[in-house]
Amino acid sequence: MIVNPATFSLPQLPSFIVIDGVNGAGKSTLQARMIEFLQSKGAASIATREPGATDLGKKLRALVLEQDEPRMCELAEMFLFAADRSEHVAKLIGPSLAKGSTVISDRYYYSTVAFQGYGRGIDLQVVESMNAIAIAGMLPHLWIHLDLDPAEGLRRNKASAAKSGADGKDAFELEELAFHTRLRNGFVELARRVREPVIELDAAQPADVVWSTVRAILERSLNGN
Image 1 (cartoon, rainbow, N blue to C red):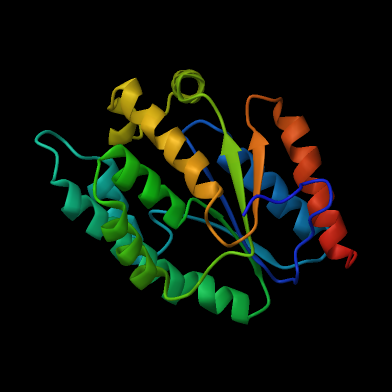
Image 2 (spheres, rainbow, N blue to C red):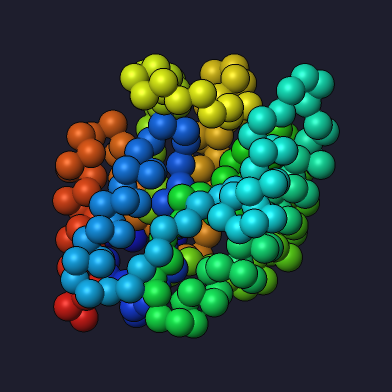
């Protein structure tokens, strides 16, 4: 359900917030700024990600993001992401919320719909049934969808890796542009049919512009407006 970023505020704190979208859209940058802001206001918060937030997740992350040829089959890939998500919900997201911390996750079940459903072509009903089992009812209070031309996202990531000298593998970034275009289309369509609130932001804007919109939402939420 797309909501107006100019008026939306979170219904409660602590909250579960997800940032998701195509590769290179600025998810981790936005997440870091959100955490820093909330903590500066005295609001407990933690940053997490999928895959790889738990001990099991770290092992699964290596399997799904560092694939060599021949690549594992599409269903096996989906099951590994679901296993990571189930552990994530049970061991980190749920307990953190119960302790009073806002949880901000870089990716969630939306990515499996986009990557394995729209990208790999697995039947969407199969993907969404598996997701429903994995999340066990844990829907976010807000999904921030960072929308971006996938070609620009891949360019950004390549430039960032070259600048930092990072050598972390992400097998998905080796897929052809048509694959990433299907992902982008999947995220856009999904944002319009989920029942949880979605803020859709143009990630082609400068990061400061994106942050100013999100900061205003956090400020309204902290003030109870």
